[in-house]
Image (cartoon, rainbow, N blue to C red):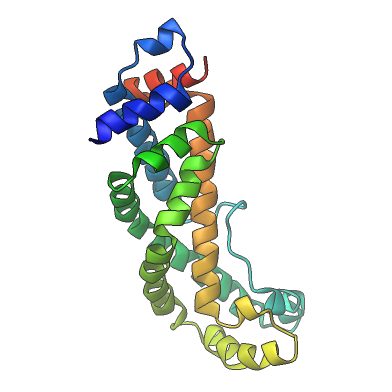
Length: 226
């Protein structure tokens, strides 16, 4: 059923009437799409889910919440800089520990992909696959990430103090609502960083499928470029 429906969308929406595309089977198209999603998501998770995956990457490194960041220089000047540094390191280590949980959820999401989803990803923009993952996995990822983050930040005294005062700070406009709880803040930043990297990998695959080293990805996405 999936293959026949997939063929219908391929015919009407995706492939123009060109000889090189006519040779591409519906089975190959489905396999190529799924392989590309697995490849891009897997690379992103592997890059982030290791020591310094977040902390050593300026594009996704998690900074102190704004309400603390503006006092960071002052803390260093009065000998409290080590506490700020410890918190930054802990937040990023927490994200690095949480991200590997995404691989299984991404894989399950690909298996559940509908024909409509597939059509949207193949005919969509450079990050339409990433957008699909956002829609289908964000809530589950948040549930998986949060306990891991909580376990990490619970060991840091400054994190405990921050949570005690941040809620009151929201009432006076001193702390943004989305930053009122450090664990929620880190979890959201981990999600943001993960989807950013997935999007970067997806763009690479679309722009140069040959570099993936996968014949089926090269065949399908190479055809879409023509």
